[in-house]
Amino acid sequence: MDKGCTIEGCDIFDFMAKHVGLTVIHPGGFEATRRLAESCHLGQGQRVIDIACGKGTSAVYLARTYGCEVVGIDFSEGLVDEANALKDRKRLDGRVSFRVGDALDLPFEDGEFDVAVSQAMLVLVADKRRAIEEALRVTKPGGRVAWLELSWHQEPPPEFLDAVSNVLCAYCMLNVHTFLGWEALFREAGVRQLQTMAFPLSGGGMTSMLADEGLVNTSKVMLKNLTDGRIRKRMNTMNRFFAEHTEYFGYGIYTGQR
Image 1 (tube, rainbow, N blue to C red):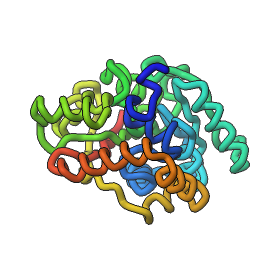
Image 2 (cartoon, rainbow, N blue to C red; image 1 turned 120 degrees about the horizontal axis):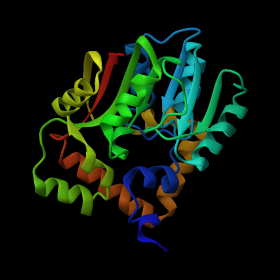
Image 3 (tube, rainbow, N blue to C red; image 1 turned 180 degrees about the vertical axis):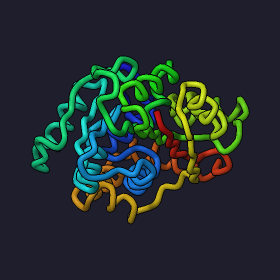
């Protein structure tokens, strides 16, 4: 098997989603999604695009909580299938829809949406500026755009980034910027009236997992951790690494206008 697909070798986001079984893997969980939504003044009747929607949990949450219409888009056909299954289970047909698409070439006309959001997406693409410009393009003039992204509190040294890759196997984190770095990128791409909310990256513990995953999936995740030594070993390595390097890890909510 390709090492990149294994428990030990896959990127941290793939590990959490595919092997651990989490459905909410962006920093801060649903509490961060709530903050992101409120920073956009999300409300009844607005049309929202969720770029890199993953399994659809955030899109469903936004539609149910704020009464908006959400279109989720993701590059992965498998994730879009899971998102559509979730939408059907929640009986949200007509209020939430999902389709396969590329964040660098969104399949929508200019100005189709009132709000564009994405969570932990920019660290996964090479051309971050193009992704930001595409989000702006499909948003109405004066509409709001918001990103939730991992962010360094300070510029990390090379040895830390080497450990991120070789110890944490968090290859996507090599694409993380400092808070100031993200702000500069958003402004250069054309985001107006940019505002930033900065938060430390913390696990949140069992209470947070229950809030994000529910009792059934939390139980499944805990059972995997107890019965699969490979998963438990990597989880312990991850938790130890994050605890030892809190001076670097954070996340930001970056909100602006087209």
